[in-house]
Image (cartoon, rainbow, N blue to C red):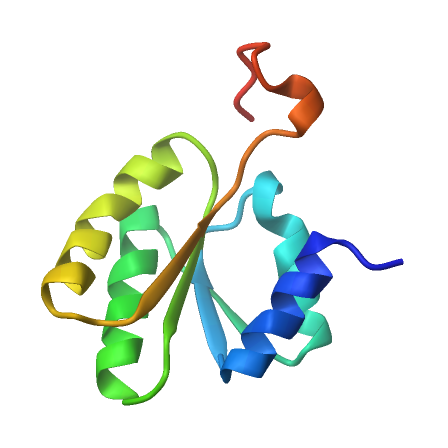
Length: 112
């Protein structure tokens, strides 16, 4: 059965993505499955800010490639913003995908 994570993996593969940078979190586990299905390397880092800095560096060092960062909801998003700002100022092509609670939990003050 296809799910969004598998579709994300296929889309990354079609875009020529070789690896993604992430700090693992429950909200984005399905995307990991999609990446593994497509042979995309998952590089787990120690802090969300490192995900976007690494994606930025990857894009700068590999012309024509896009850097991809995957972070979880809440603080994962805010921690990643400095790397996003640096990539934006450098015109570095990165994609940042952020997790979210299941739709049924939205508005119920549940984060993780």
